Length: 173
Image 1 (cartoon, helix red, strand yellow):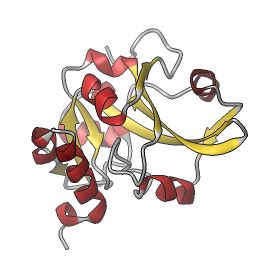
Image 2: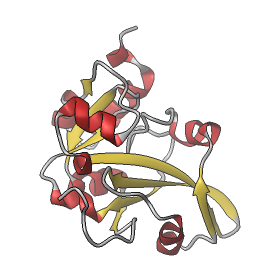
Image 3: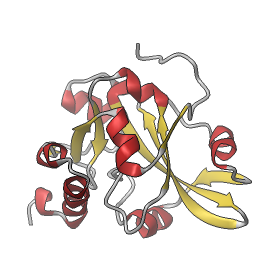
């Protein structure tokens, strides 16, 4: 099986097509090397790190229940867990372990896409991504990415645009 035929990448491509984003599905790129971090993805694509949409899955306690929370952050920022908790009304937000991430996304850490999950996730999209005409998101595998926009990420995920870092200035600008 080639990397492009990987089940998680196929699920992402199908989700993009179902959302009417055939161009994004066709734009899935398999990189030569792993791009598990924003810096590695930016280097491989020849773009600024801020144009990489990191998919970070957290475990959020909302109404007493532990649920997944997806934060799509600009690669130039770190998500602030206290800010995330405030934004979604959670009593606690912490990093999810690899098993929790795979259970809720069907994908492994380092390649989690904004879509293609078994069921929709509560999603916050970093408002700093709007500064870039094209952003790159993971496509379900640590070597796969696709081009999109901040507005498309919000629409695709049913997410909410928010300042997930608490930072006002984009350090990559």
